[in-house]
Length: 318
Length: 318
Image 1 (tube, rainbow over the protein chains, first blue to last red):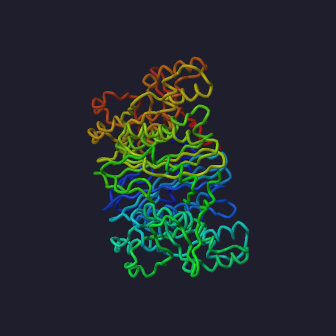
Image 2 (cartoon, each protein chain N blue to C red):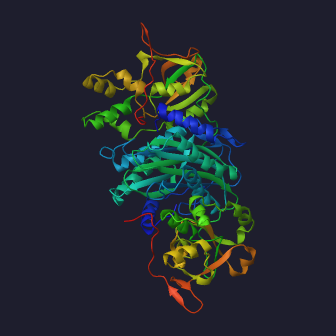
Image 3 (cartoon, each protein chain N blue to C red):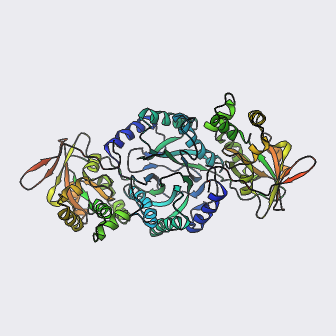
């Protein structure tokens, strides 16, 4: 889109902050488009948008954290394909209330995560926004063997890479201005995409029937991962609760299980594997099993609780 | 980002509308990310955002036109590298006032342009917006020889692929609800990215010193293309005016030259070539020449008019 001298000076400022080059760069940031030499294997691309007042509020999201998280949610999608990221493009619709130092901190947060993963911010767009801040990030990565959501079979175990419901716990603590809950707040503000698992996922790729990241709450995500026309049981005693979630649930007189079932944005990975292959994934938690039966249950030691009403996650009221 | 059942149903609807596959598709739309087999040559990526009330108004932009244009502006960046497009991702921050049939028409407009260029819409995101519509599109393409903005030399001619100021003419006619000016309105609503020129640009790539697309107005764009510390003359008698612009200028008692110098969003291409190579580009208009002198002039037969004040294009007031 067209830019003005004011935009040019902001773009120069951003360029100075993000510019890095590697062996694959052919035409760096600053031309009509970014050009690079392909990586081996397949290309993997994703794109994810965050809107002020819908996905975040600026009273508890610092510029640094928002820069970090808007990239992190995309890197989680890359990890969920068993891929590694190389390049990100960032578009910002920027309201006047946010000044240049806010913008500096936003890119500091984003490049801090990008640097952790040896990737670069290479383009995007900057636009004025009359009111809300909107951040949209696309990422380009690559992998040898893509790991998809499709392929879970009845009888497969449902494995999870870490605690769920923790981001929701953090968001609630932030919104209610509660002190403590530091792990939960950090999970909500600066979720860690599970790129650390990619090398081992690629090594075991023939054993992985299906893989995805957990961003919409466990029930909604497992519905995406289930076998065609199938369902699943979740094992109540194995649900991956974090102490912060249990503690917040006590304080607020809520059922912590709901945090896991319906809280989104944890960005852990979910996997379907044959029960005999569970031993190859010792660090993953076994939290459920897929079934031919299309119903969805939470299984307790003495009873099965059927889930009939599928609650949406909070970001699309109406 | 997390999605809700409402978003899922909209996403299904979009998927149905855009889904196409080709030989390069490895994992289609609908997984955590889109996966494809690389194209020969270099990869080319760009991303461009449009914000309601800043880049367009919905009272004169139909859903179809907006879908078309939000892709077109990106394809223009791809053409400006001498590349061809393969895949687009689209993020929408969607206010409640826009219903599902609006969304259908938006994707009809986008896929109509995508189909013209044998490319696919393969992903993106959908978010609620509390107020404004925001559209952000990223495109992945490829090329054998990238053609960059850098490389113009003093003495090089400045060539242009078609009329400039026409989009500004159309926007003005639309905003003032004037009848007629059909070419100009079409240029503003559905600009044609000059992908038709890419094959010949690649063929002549050794003769092209610098190339870019014209989106910010001729003066601002030529400032990007000029040699380091250099300037340029624009030839007043050769400025690529369209009859619609001349006619609107008469109606509104304006100088049509200003439309060319400062009106943006035409998405024609600008090129710098050695004067001896002009003969290889017979369909391009010779509109200026780069100089060692850093000043900028509009050259008339009998005098040189120096441009000292650089007016911004309209989209970033303040």
